[in-house]
Image (tube, rainbow, N blue to C red; front, side, top):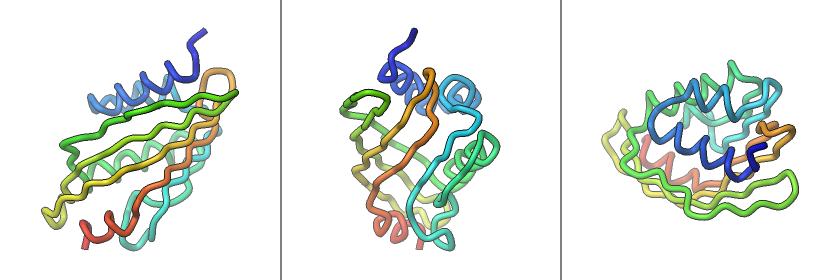
Length: 132
């Protein structure tokens, strides 16, 4: 069986190559809750998403709004069914052309090798500034 850290690593690799179908199939549980902070009127990808269809829409919104030049998970910490990932990103907001650089923390909860909960911690003010 794949470890939760290995599943997480493969999920990031799929995201980095733009392979969202593989990420959704291999990493996300059907009943996953996905939480990304921020004001929804300024950040179209912000919110709480339930289930694969809503989470897939989150990735559509990210792709329509941001062009990443860097998305780098730097450290993965596993304890029990939880994996915490610390990383950095640099992206261009397609709407404004402004660049945002951010450090982030992602917290995954796993059950039977699939993520059942994801929560992101990030400087949403930096995202809003890039989108405004």
